[in-house]
Length: 341
Image 1 (tube, rainbow, N blue to C red):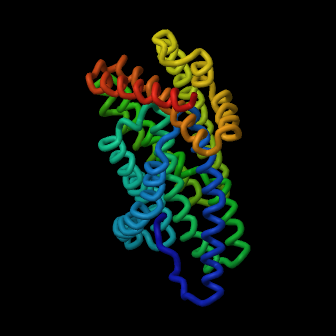
Image 2 (cartoon, rainbow, N blue to C red):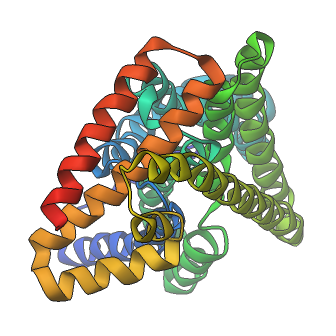
Image 3 (cartoon, rainbow, N blue to C red):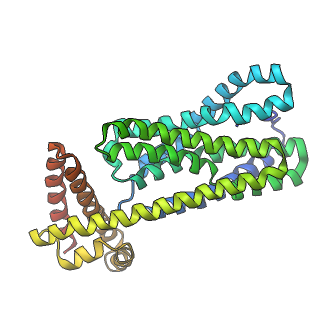
C-alpha cells in the first residue's frame, strides 16, 4: 500500500462500487480466515484475541501505513518522478513500514498475552490474522482506485489477482514475524530469543519486497511474484504440519501421565490426542446434549491441550508459575469431566 486512491464522491453509482468492492474483499478473506482458524487443531486461540489481531491489521495498521508510506515516499517521487518513484516506494518503503506496523500487534500479544503462545503454530496463526485484516481493507482501497482509473474490466482482474491469487500474501508476510516471536517464546537460548523475532521480521520484509518489486517492474514479472509467494505459502504449510505433529507428540506424552494419575480416562485420552476423534465426539455431543453440552466438552478438551502445552513449558523452563497453572488446569479438567458425566 503506497498511495491513496482517488477520493470517491458519494453518488449512488460510487456507493454501489464501494459496497461491491467491500464484498469482493471480504468474501475471500473470510474463506482464508476460516482455513487459518481450522488449521489450529488441538488448542484454538481465543476468538477475542484473534479478532483483535485481525482488527489491528484492518484499522490502525492501514491508517498508519497510509501516513508513513506517503511521508517516506515523498523524497522518492521528487527525485525519480511519479512512475519510478511509485515503483521504488512500493519496493523500498512499503515492506518495512507495513511489516513493522503489523508486527506491533504480535509484540503486544507477546508482552501482554504471552501465555496464549504455546507453540510456533500459534505465532503463525496470530501473524496470519493480522495480515488478513490488513489485506482485506487494503484491497478495498485498490479495487475502488483501479475501477476509477481503468474501468470494470481492470476492476475484475484486480479482484482475482489481489483477492484470490495473491490473497494470502499479507498473511504469509506477517506470519513470518509471528513465527519468529513464537520461537523466541519457546526457546531457552538467550541469543535465539533476541535473534528469532528480528529474523522473522526481516523475512517478512524480504518476501514483501520480492513481491512488490516483481509486480512493479512489469506485468511479465507477476510469474516471479507468484512463484515466490506461493513457494512461501507452501513452506509455511510444511512448518504448520511439522508444528501439528510436534503438538500431537506433546499431547501423547504429557496426557498419558494424566491417565496414570487418574485425571483422564483412557477414552478421554484417545480422544484428546486425535483431532479427528475430537471432532467426531463434539458433533456427537452436540446431538445428544445440545449447545451447552458441546461448550462443556469443547472446553474440556481445550483444557487438556492447555495442560499438555503447559507441562511442556515447565519441562523447558522449570518455572514456578507453570507449576501453579498446571494444578489449576487439572482442577478445571476434573470439574469439567464431572460435568460431562
